[in-house]
Each structure stands twice: as C-alpha cells, then as structure tokens.
Image 1 (cartoon, rainbow, N blue to C red):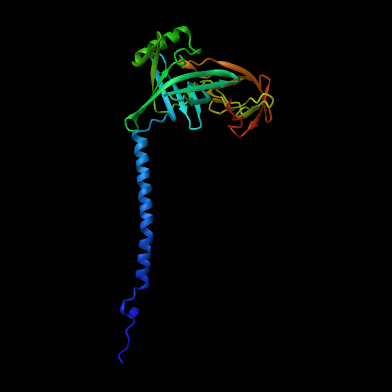
Image 2: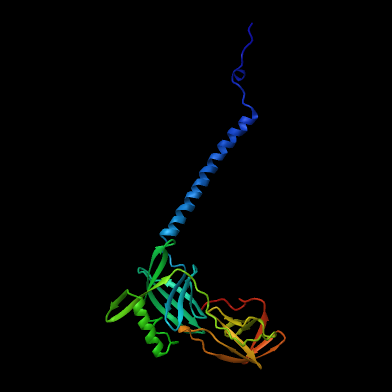
Length: 294
C-alpha cells in the first residue's frame, strides 16, 4: 500500500531564522507607529510654541534709551505665579494672577510687610519665535512713569521719552494709559563697581541674617571682585562695594541709571558678622534665607 502523506509533511517548514524575522517585524510595527506619533506630537507642539504661543511666561524687557542714560524695566513671569520685577541692580519678587474673564493681570509685590507694587495691566502677546515676540502691557497704575525713585525733573523727562516711543495708548475718563511694548528677553542687574575697591578677606563670602521672631531673613554676599549681593524671598539687590576702617560703602543702580552711595559699619569675629547691630552667620548657601513669599 502506498504510504500516507501527512499534511504537515506537505507544507514546507519555516526555518527558525525566518520565524524570528517575522516575529520581529510584527513587534516592530507598533514601535514604529508609536515613534512617529511621538515625533508628530513634538513637531506639532514645537510649531505651536514657535508661531502661536501667547503665553506671558518668561522674561520681558522694556528699555528707554536717552542721551544721558540707558535703563530698562523687566518682568519675569514664572509658572508658579511668581513674578520678578527688575530695574537697575534691584529685583523685587511677588505674585501675579490673571483677572477672570478679562485679558488682564494683577501684580502684587510686598516688601517687609509694606506694599511695593499693587498694579493691574491689560496684556496682549504678539509675534513669534522667529520674528520676535512682544508683550504689550497697558499700564493702568502709573507704575513705571511715576516711580518714587525719580525726581520731578527726571519724571518729566521720562514721561516725554515714553510718549515719543509709545504710539499706542488708551484714553478713558480723561486719563491716558500708555501701552508699553516689552520684548521677549531677559536683562541682568546693572552694577557700578568702585575703582578704588580693595577686598577684606574676613568679609568675603555669604552671611545669613535670620530673625526667628519676625520671620525676616536674608543673605548678603561679598565677592573679591567688588560685588555685593543681598537676597531674600522678597527682593534681590546687586551692586558695588568697598571697605575702609570697618565701614562698607555700597550702591545699587536705581531707576534712571542712578546709584547713590550708602554705608554701614561692620565687624567680623570668626563665623559671625555684625552689621549695624544685626548679627549674621557665615553660610555656604546663597539661598539659606526663608523662602516663603508673603
């Protein structure tokens, strides 16, 4: 009798190598799809960020240039509702919030329990990453034009310069509010160092003042290149300093590019620094101060 042919014998058997190849192809297809979906998502959000981003997050600078001085105002909006307001060598730290049902932001900055900025701004973001982004803030508070740090003569000059530079404005009930164009870049602190600076090695480094009763604390840092930096949860000052016979003279650049000399007496004993009766302790942490923003 003829031998029976089994079905398995009639179908050519695939080698183990071919089976592994087909299995790898089946496994690779979902991975390829996932990769291309991820790539498409990245490209989409990249294009959106580049051309359609209307977020105010980041640093924005408004600069006034005049023949005798140059200075700028800068807002940096962070994603935890913290805002930093900088001009010259001074930075003030506070909170911002969006006004409900209106293209407006409220900025509040307090310093040592007192209100420094309590202001509202209409806002509008235009442009893109290629051509440059602009944040237009309609100043409804007179925050920039009516700074307490400006003399009457300087304020008049700044008001004239502002009107010359800013063409857009809004007039309501007889009051004109100017729309200031902030460009999307950051500025560093302006520092005026002393030519006759000489370092005091006992003073160099970072010192912490911490009043546990009031909760007020700050760090102050003296560098060997003549820079002084004072930091707390509410402000940051950076300027030049010099020392002589136990007296430290320092400055911070304020509005209009001016920097007035100030001074304090100090003494150092080991890891302790005394400034006008306040005792500070040496630290290696620039941010050792309490970080709660009130």
